[in-house]
Length: 94
Image 1 (cartoon, rainbow, N blue to C red):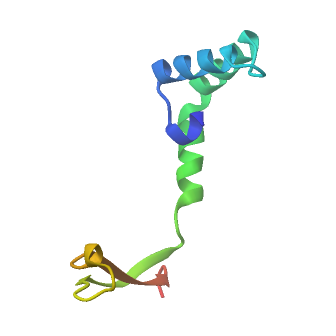
Image 2 (image 1 turned 120 degrees about the horizontal axis):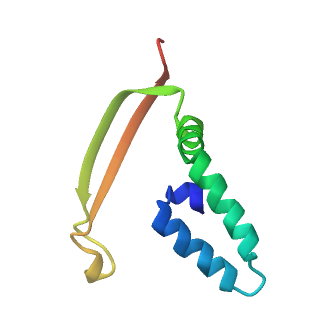
């Protein structure tokens, strides 16, 4: 949770305090260790998560359109916009 939210120090403190008050949560000593680790390694953890989430592909082509439904069984669904997106991916350099 801490890494995915990329918490700043105020958010981290609030989160860890909530975790110590929760039944079955962490102890205050554990919270202190987690806080110290996060303060020292936040940048490296963030960069690692970003590199793991990148695609090895590039966007080669993209088409999109918006359709409106003009006739349906239920009147409340008429004129409901629907977006359709088509993306073509390719390997970098290919």
